[in-house]
Length: 278
Image 1: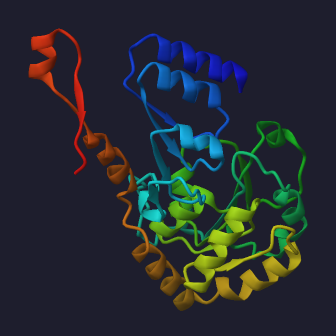
Image 2 (image 1 turned 180 degrees about the vertical axis):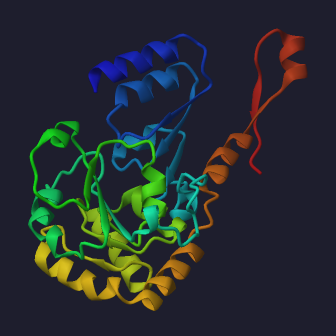
């Protein structure tokens, strides 16, 4: 974190940037302060602590923050170019299950779930996205229908073509909702549990476990639901209707708050800006 912060401070001091965007859970207080000194506009994505009050604009699609200016799923920054979006497509004509617990599997959920993966029908292709590349080389006997992957280029294709996704929540949950992929959430953190429970009440997800999950119970609850295609179709339809995918457009729209005044800047020989709320 220190090396990254030092590199960012060097960039800020170079004078080449007008805006800095942070998606790092308030690990960069020193950079926030440097941006303020250099008059660089700062935007935080899903920041959470009191340190985020040092930022100019806060966008919180998932994590609650009392300082936030733009809040909720409509500000989720999503990949909207997925080729399987809103389509009932199967890779190699097989049903598939997508499993991913994020870049850091903090609660070690995959290890807990692994003994029960064989409970899923062998007719399903199971794509497991690993947090650690080293796990690709571990010997496993999960079955010929199980693929272990790390940062695959076709990540969103695998997700978009899945019948169900087993995930931790966060932005990946927002992406599942937008794509219409029924998700079962096994959360890593309290805020993921809270958001997933809200989605469950709204009928937008397949199910939610506690953070300290009973993996067997989770799989047992998924099995009958996976065979209920009308139910999965209803979940997908409700999920898609909950997020229109224009979060990035809304977030980038906030740059319109800052207008560069070319005529004035040329006349006075220095860059002049004005805030124009719209």
